[in-house]
Length: 155
Image (tube, one colour):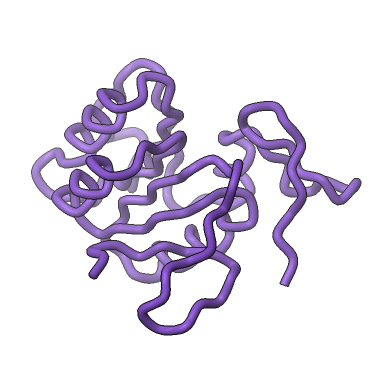
């Protein structure tokens, strides 16, 4: 049984594995708040294969099994766990794009070089833009972070 939630727009029967997303970049969201887990996962699954976890320990287990291209990690994790998760992700993929969601940007510890920070509350489209997608794409194709166009998932 998986220790993490995989968010896709494809509905699967209980216990079934989700349909592989193909060339879609893999995004890991590490967020302890259930509402943020849901909103981030649901919104970003339009463009990415999304995994959502609520702790650093679970994130480490997922990272051991799945390389990720993108990471959203919350500063609300205890014991500087955001630093640990980011380090684990970078050890497995040195080009991972990292966004930290912070409660108070003015009081936040400095983020490592190459890490984007967004202050809560934030617009979901801001995250999409940091990951290289245009949430307002009008031609039916959304640019992927790797520069290749991809078709949006349609229900």
